Image: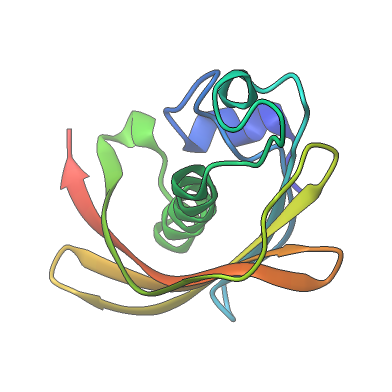
Length: 146
């Protein structure tokens, strides 16, 4: 549904911190998104994150979920960063890691809008590999004007 060129219109991140490769489902009525990140051994973090047993750092899995949630927030509002708004990742609740993410995995990112109070947005997020949850959390973002 969204290729990398369109994703770059919604996320200000660039290499090596753009962690969403493609959006495959987006439903603004149900307020959900499903995207993925292809995890390659060529990622720069694998050079130093357990080089003998490379695993994707958990903080980057959280960041990938937050980026998917950010795209969803922009789509719900029908806006883009170029319109003068950004979402800043400000926290997580109910965070759980269940298994490591390895080179060669496709990390599926799911987010569902939960609620908005003022400028604070909450999303229920999951990251999956081969249909199994590897991480889940409530992602908290702050909407800010540029």
